[in-house]
Image (cartoon, rainbow, N blue to C red; front, side, top):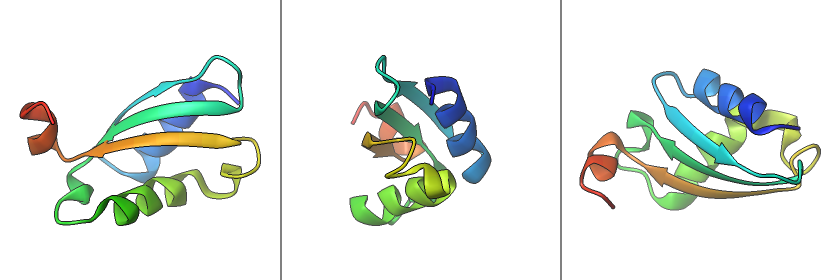
Amino acid sequence: MDTQTIKNLIEQGLPGASAQVLGADGVHFEATVIAAQFAGKLPLARHRLVYAALGDLMGGAIHALALKTLTPDEANKGH
């Protein structure tokens, strides 16, 4: 698994989202995802949206994914 594939899957699964994915070892990754769909949602609900975009890869090809999820407003305010 590679960072570009994960980025593409997240952005396809959350239209309009912007994702930055890091991870050099191919199984442990960190992602910052900015998406309007996160507005009004608690962190767990936000993470579930990202996990849904990745489907069966979570727990399989992607062993671990640390997430930072922001709305566009939150990202612009530097949160």
